[in-house]
Length: 103
Image (cartoon, rainbow, N blue to C red; front, side, top):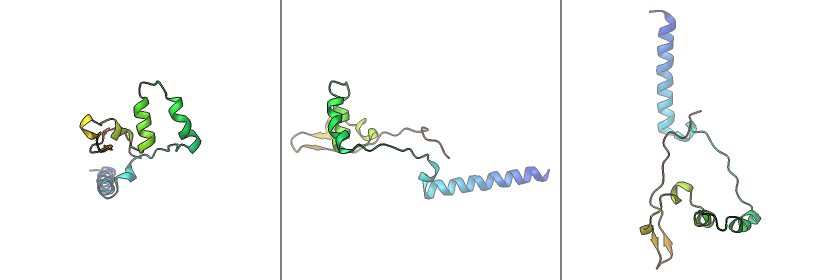
């Protein structure tokens, strides 16, 4: 067996061990980070008027006023709403497997 094949096997084995270790100890290192825009106070005040009559107006309002994530809002169910106490329970989160790429 040529030395190049041995080296390649050792290199790939080491890379797999390193990848596994990184994933177990800090999976965020393997995910691409996305920048996002935080609304200014002026933008937050103008947003409800800009989304009025939009089919998802209620979802936009909920996101703006509760700071819930998209994945939390999209899995809400009616039993999560306690109208008497004015509470909204966040018990689930939508997962999108395979949407993020390793660096």
